[in-house]
Length: 95
Image 1 (spheres, rainbow, N blue to C red):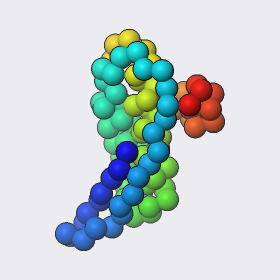
Image 2: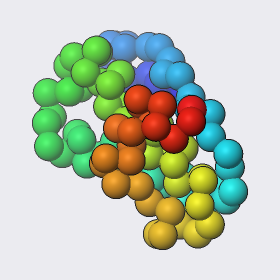
Image 3: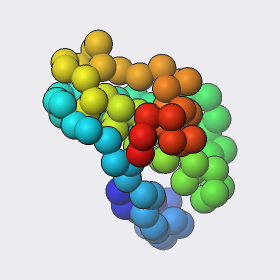
Image 4: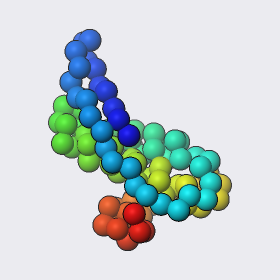
């Protein structure tokens, strides 16, 4: 996943966050899961936008949420818990 974040027309961050490798069953809801996780973290802490390292961590979390969502059938039933997303970071879901 790559991202560009601009403020006042100036590029602040540019980079990529690695994908998670999972056994995909259904991609329905993966993008919604990613966006929801990203917005949830940004709503909790608006200062993330000013800290590239923390922003990368949040983008990785959002990637994990999107990836986990593809491992189950359907959209809502496939949405992960925060613990499941953090488990993927640690290899608990076989990334």
